[in-house]
Length: 273
Image (cartoon, rainbow, N blue to C red; front, side, top):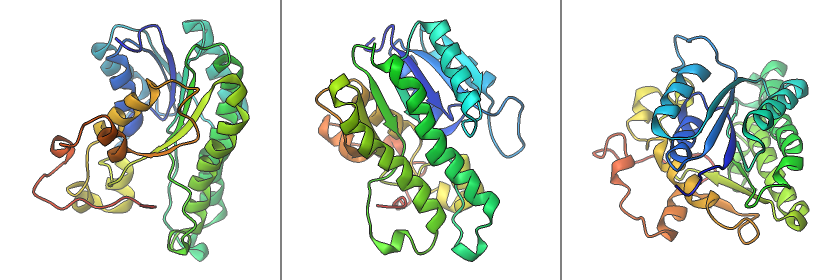
């Protein structure tokens, strides 16, 4: 129970990667606060904060706190952080998983899409970090983990979907800056990104449908990598842009077949890899 009595706040944890990380850490005894928007079932999106909370609670011994949060709004963030601290007594780990995606070229990217991606991916991530830092300063092994890619300035990642790339790189720049800024407080700031596409609602509904799902891995591989990152000493491991496969390899885990949705198919690399 490596995370017993640890308090973890995860954005976008009602489904997909965020929920998988929540389940993995809950299994190690962590208290989990689920910060997400969905409170009623959606025809194309599986799960709500309440159904996720029930599922997570079954996997662990800690507390689970479902919070309806829209991280585009600072008041919503501040309320979520206050409620988490009141319920758990503090915050040890922040996982910024919530994200918006639209893989459109510039002419097809309207202002609403731009604002959504930058409001969630960059602004929301930044303000969530800001709100949690005072509490992370009081933690014994404090971590911030952003689900964002390595900073690769190859034009091929910008040309097809400039607005999205800017927003995800914005999340990574938060890691780049906070890792150095927070060193005196021994707060780790790292990024984690999957080597392959992951079977999530975004992949199914927005990117490639079942064709891509069948060539993806399950969210559990990212959750396992997150677990290994977050158990490391915060003062020794910060400013890293981790890839899930590489994290597991460093832990001696090289047989990844169980994470493939369909082992018969060749896996597809994720964006920015």
